[in-house]
Image (cartoon, rainbow, N blue to C red; front, top):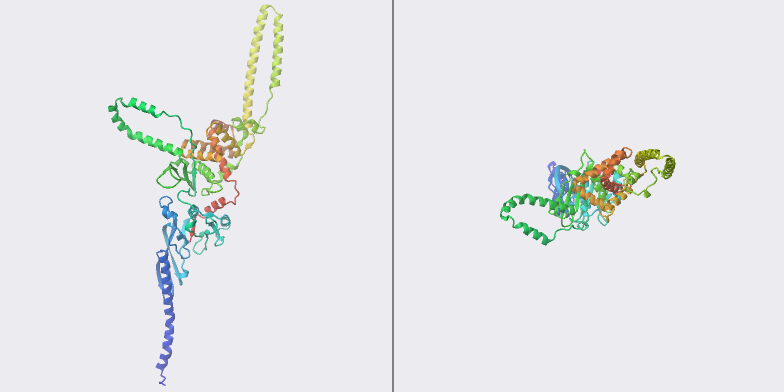
Amino acid sequence: MPNVTPEYIITIIGVPLAVLGVLPILYNTLSTLAALSKIKRMLRHGKLTALTRSDIINRVIEVELPRYAVQPWDRFHHRERYWQISRQPSSIPGGSWTTFNWKTNTIGIKTQRVEYADQLRQPQVDIEFHELVAYLLDLGAVPDVHGWRLLRSTGLWTPTGCSLMKNPRGTHVVLAMAPLEDSDGHLSLKVAWEPSWTTRDASTLPPYWVRLPPPPDKEPEEKPSASQEIVQSEETSDVDKTEEEPDKKKESSPKESLDSIQKQAERNATAPITCQFSVDGLQSALSQNQGPPISTVFDVHSLHIEHLRINSLKMNGKWFASAATAYGTTSQTVLWNYKIPDEILAFARRDSVPCGVLELLGVVDSSLTPQWETKYNDGMEQHEAFVRRSQEQRIAMAAELRMDAGQRQLAGMQRRDREMMQNMNEMRDRTIRDTQRRETRRHEALQSPKWDTKLVAEHSLAWLKQRKTVDSELALRDVVGTVLHRMVLDGEFASAIFEMLDVWKAWTDNGGMRNADLDILQSRFEAFAHASLLVTLIKDATTADEGTLSMDLQECMRMWRVVRLG
């Protein structure tokens, strides 16, 4: 046995202890390097650019990932990116937004300190809530009624995993609530999608868009035959042909320009118009001459819509956006991006048009209205007056027969003068009485029972069809579509309707119609008839209960402008 010396004891005991002391460092180093390698592999798979740093002693890995604000690609110009989902979505928690192709903008950097690879979280992205929902709707997603109602009532306290949208068949969740770990007080959402769920394409009408139909084709007017045109052209072509050629060259350019403008206007009048709406009203209007709606960006024509935009000076833009929103709201589609102002909703729901006024204007027959005017029976009075005048005339003529010739002639002249004066006085009294009765009738008409907006619109539509102003075979909703179509193209026509709506709303807010309002209505009833069609459609679109999907969507869009998606 070797001599046991202190050096020997230190060697025997100290070396194993030193080895044991280095093992944790080696373990931390190996674990950190392994976790770092896995993190980098995850980042490469997700095509994410990140800066990584590792502290092998403290077993800490720092990862700097960019934070983005995203929005969908343009539906018309970047069709492939818009409709196809990403081929390599990120599998890192918080990166569900990489399922789709987005237009990204870096807005910051988020630094994370993790120990294991499964602790890594991809930063959520900022996105406009209405753009996200519109994009999913455009792909074919279906809103979950229960989820939106719960989100509206509970807000950030909505349970994680609550479904807001599902795939077209309703079997899988597309948009759901996500944990609030990285939301910073924003609404946190996550998304999922499969290529087989896409049921729409570029030919379908996007969300927040409304298609306005043109008026039905009318019978073509008689035009001169081709032979007549040829004869007329031959008669005029040989006259001073050499002298007219320079003038034709000079005038061809402006004439062709005017012809092209006129032809474009004619095409617009017969082509459907698609209008895009946002929370601020009408954004754009496109007229498409050929092909399926919104199929390409090359066959559409942008229209002038400045007279329909919302501004603080007039309500024209609000009227049009409200009517178009009501027209675009059906049982299958809900155009909820633009919220109809409360003042217009309150106006549309009130009964404000006296039925007597409609009868006074000849729009409604008296048999369809309740008794509202005073009835006069002048037959007996006129009969008594006639009998009295006849008796007086017989008595006077009998007295004249007993007179000599000179007195008889003088008495006859006096009697005829007296009868003529009496007739004139009666005519004057009758005129005054009729004028007073007309004024009384106008006053009673203004005070007559007020009719529901829908009833007014039905009679107005019948009045328009009777005068062949609108097609007699169209229903009320279809007529409104053609009226909105014409309002886009004809600023004067739109202004007349807007002015009538302002007058109508003013007398409704002021307690009732006055004589001045009746005069305006009498002189411009056609504009009022068109306006009544718009108002009743607004009322029909807003009679739903407050808890419907449309109202829930509108309220959620108002509360959450920007959300976190991941």
